[in-house]
Image (cartoon, rainbow, N blue to C red; front, side, top):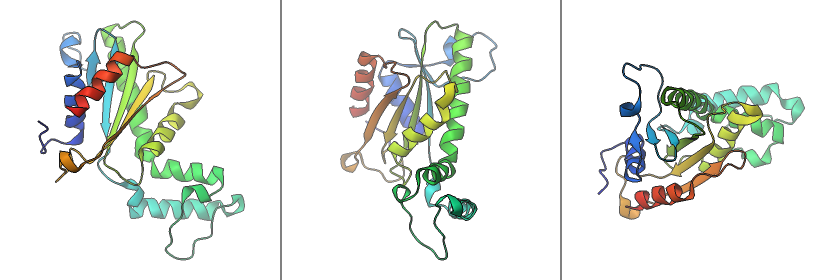
Length: 214
């Protein structure tokens, strides 16, 4: 049974534990006080860090103001001229402007990706794992910043060989774990994405899916 009082981070950690994962703390050296990820699948080995997005940044006035400033500075590059409140779709913008807009809207995703890489990297080093798989999980309610945008933002964060400890991402878009959400009336969308073609262990992928359904 899913406890409706748990938040999304707790929900995802519980799902990963139900799939066979364990908290990393018991595996860490005695006295270790460095960065750490959330979950370890020791027999794979897979190190997992879970990040939850609790606020819809794309709908905030702060973001709207930042976008307006960016548009004003990039009119020569095709940015729209904004004179009143309006709705702008990213796919209507020139590619370079759309990318700038995405980075403003998804600033937290970019920051969390970098932070997750540090946590996974430190955990791998502390445990002395050989050829591990680092998995970053993003779980979020169905905000304007949707799962496809999150995938784009993480890819943007790891391009050029950065964040090398992240080998793949799992994005979960669901109202579960939020106030008033009912499992019987809630759709969830889960997608795996691997970096550089390195595949996430198929059996573990299936186990996570089964654990989510349960």
